[in-house]
Amino acid sequence: MQKIGKYEIVKEIGKGATSVVYLANDPFAGRQVAIKLVRQEALIDKEHGRRFQKLFLTEASLAGKLEHPHIVSIFDAEASDTGSYIVMEYIDGGTLEHFCRVENLLPIPRIIEIIFKCSKALDFAHRHGIIHRDIKPANILATEGSDIKISDFGAALSLASETTQVTGVGSPAYMSPEQVRDHDLTHQTDIFSLGVVMYQLLGGKLPFKATNNFSMVYQIINVDPPPPSVHRPEIPPAVDLIVKRAMQKNPERRYQTWHEFSADLASVFVDLRYLPELVPETEKFNTLRDLALFAAFSDVDLWQVVRISTWSRHPAGATLIREGDAGRSFFILAAGQVRVTKSGRLLNVLNTGECFGEMSYLGTSDTHRSATVIALTDITLIEIVDEALEQSTESCRSRFNAAFLALLVSRLESANIRVSRLLVDGNLGASTAAAARP
Image (cartoon, rainbow, N blue to C red; front, top):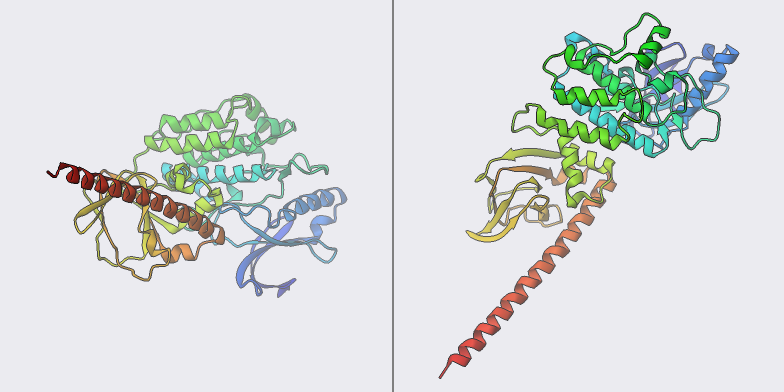
């Protein structure tokens, strides 16, 4: 086979009972894609064929609907008598299954970061009316660095759909109690499943282990597993508690929202020992979300900012930029306070959430710094190179442009107030001097 539709086949990269996955070239978009092609023999059995076709159409219907940095994009789909396939974003990497074995466990901070990103992606899907229903390590792809992508929404439940949904789908070891009972599901079933994934990544073992599905179902409904720290003693108590709450059998005692889950994941970093100069991506995202400058940014925009920015920590007294130095980047204070001087004179004191150096992006032809900036306290600094922002998404650039415009207006208003005060003070001084003359 050389082509599927308009796509040029490069090689086969995976095969299952119902489909074959190929790496292919999209000649029109100029990119590599992954194509999941339905095996015709999977449709021969009348009952199973109808069921699989339903799952296939569910995933195909999501084409272009779940655009998120941590969800595999679906670009195109075709369902016909001659062949059915789904065209997806190609991810050059493996799944999290590799990191579920004791000999391959990831550092605890990296695991927290992965689960945090999954929680944000699944929250995004839920806000679009989608429950995944099959969260497991095999459906979470590990990309370069510390990024992940959630895949395989074939089992997804659409809350807005009026058609009959396929039941009894999912992987037993990761199912919630309400899912194995075939009860009505909410987003909390995905929270439970992600808790199981977190447990396995932390300790290298599943919380429920059985020789058959009936035993597995019994354990999921009735047995409380030991905390993951039993399998890995260095796991902090706070992490144990997050896993425990995510895997509560009663949904009323489980995390009620994805926001609650991700907030606890972010806060647990205080119990973890990072090198002081490193800033975890979880902290980056939550810091950006709390800054007024990014109030209008969507989650997707914020993840874009995380990707194009460089974060660093500096002690009080550190010189961040010098007057006259060349530079094509701007800075945002994630934490702390700095002073801005020109020719040795104090111009301003900037606090958390404020930015400096943005004129390099706003179109000035002079690439030399017009002032010196020195840390007044220990600070966390965000740096974004102009070229990186220019190559980001249109939405991200638009948000920055609007934020910078509001910032310039605010600074002009402040400058006008200062000038007015100076003029008033000057006039009062002149009047006082005249009145004092004999």
